[in-house]
Length: 558
Ligand code: ADP
Image 1 (tube, protein in one colour):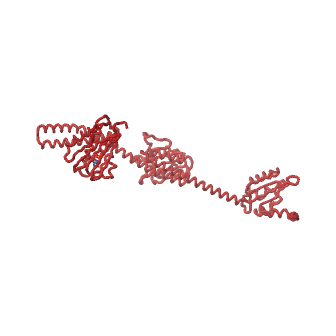
Image 2 (cartoon, rainbow, N blue to C red):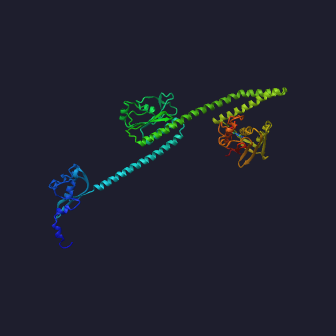
């Protein structure tokens, strides 16, 4: 300090010094009376010195808007009297009844003897910092909410994917209901979820499945007489095919008067969502979700529930179609089993008698005019017999009753015998066998393997109407014996080749004209081959010919 500066400083009054500060500063006596306040403190509150000077500090304008704030200040004054400094953020009242956030400090001021003479309140305006902080907190909170919503949306999409894949495996309507009821309950933490479907005659609703009284496959659904008018939310959903969302019990009563909820839903349910299960303009039922508390059903939740309802309705429709199809298949299989079995008995008698008659006529040398018709009867009866055998095999496969009885035999001998038996019956075809002279022993069901080879040979004959050679190749490949049968017939269109082994499948190029058949021979052939642990494959070119190759394991060790 320059000499003389101290004197200059002393010449300023304390008041002038305080007034020059931008901070709010005052002087309070030991017993809490405000005796000084600088211009900044007075100006910000629009006060005159006389408004506050000489008054108890805690009762002055700045604090008098809130008793709690005043009490907090009294505490700070008491601490000041005890020699402690207080500092805290607090709101004070300023001009025009506004509130301002200040960083407030109250410190004791001691005299030269160390006695506390005054308490010095000071403060600075921190409202801007506060508002920035508040804004930041607000933005952070908004970001947090947005992130939570995004996470929830992702979880719901994942849930929807889970539901979709679970529904794709649901075969019966009850499976569908189980998936939906459980997933919705879990995802939304719902109190109860129930799925209702229309009864067969359409006059009632039935509980297909619900969270609290899950029916088993065998329990009959509980019918609920349906209120088809719109005085009931169920009726409204069924009629309009639109979802109904009811926030609370009061909301429900206001909209639908004294409506009772159908069982098994609890009557005191609050939030309620009714979702139509609609496919192709038909509402098949309703999925009802209830909550124990009122629920606002925000937009994303409504969309989620509706998406589930759409998926559920489609899955229900699929399950229904599937069960109708299954019923038709069962009826067909039953018919095939019974018909082929029952038709065979009279056919066997007829065939036996026809063959007997044929032999007698030949013996009596009655001539072609008599023998030809009877031989035609024998041939057609044999053909009918083969068809019935195939049908019987088919139903055995379907019921798991196709029995394979294995034993060792020489496959080469079997093929030779077949060639020897079939060749004399052919006029336009020749059967050629290509095989090593050695025995090719195999552990398999000889009768069934004969059936397989016969079947493929008869197809080769049937589907090469112009005649020609049919080549049978027999060879050992590692641990397998393979029979390949090639013809030079009509061949198989490329697109048909992958379906050949399906039941009742016939390629487009054989469905017209004279190629009669049931389309089950290859299905049976593949089943027999597979039950032996073998494989069957086909190569063909339309118009050129076809080769079927069967490979069977030498023994059953694999
Ligand atoms: P089917 O001969 O009674 O129709 P299959 O199950 O034995 O029934 O054969 C299924 C289909 O495979 C046949 O309808 C035919 O379209 C095709 N197919 C089988 N073998 C041959 C072949 N050798 N040449 C051409 N097409 C064949």
